[in-house]
Image (cartoon, rainbow, N blue to C red):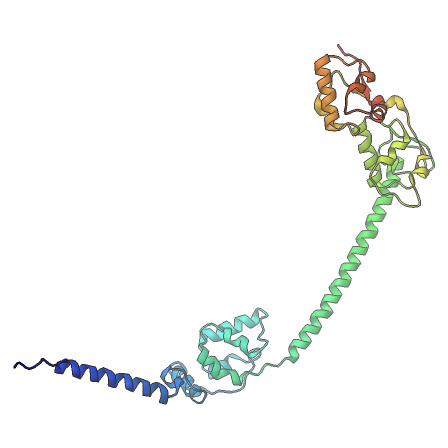
Length: 319
């Protein structure tokens, strides 16, 4: 009767036992030895020795002492174990008005490791009194700058007012208007300079009046001024301004309906685009429009539109 072969060979059995013993040793090591020892992290008690061990090859004499990174000199930094190029960077940073406001700001120093910073951190003492004085000086200088700026703005404002009054006086004299503020002006011939001489009309209102007059082709009534979208002084409403204005209807420049383009019709303030297009198409169909009565047949035109447009449309034929 043949004997059964063994389940494991001798070499396999020895290897399995070896692996189990190694795993057991790892478990014991993890649970017994402190984590900071096997992870390579120095304990607080060994940080000072680690700092000395890592820096002795560059600085044989390291003396840890209390220092302020904002005021310490290069010799103090050298005694703390910092390298020459690190000290140079600190000095450049301070020359550019750089400041360390707390101890953690010093950790941003290029080339300074976390472990080295943890050694130096208890020795960093920053004096905050200069920051308070510096802040007070800044606010004093800022308030002075603001006062100077307000004074400059005031002087500029006064000079602009004086220049504006001089400009008005020179405009009155050089253009020889021979008008005073209570003189009556013709609305269709007065320019912005003449309109500015009237009480209640400023530069914005004068420009709006002239712009509307050019768009219409001229005013036929003073009541058309109420259509302007401007803000008047409450002391000088349109009624008080109209007392010094009059309109000459003969100075109106009408649109030649039988010769104008669609673009010219659409530019008129009293014509909408559908109305201008209807008039233009009607002219193209009939070749000639003879009077306003023919426009009443258009659906987009009502009696009020016909009445407003009558002074601004001409049906004459030019050869």
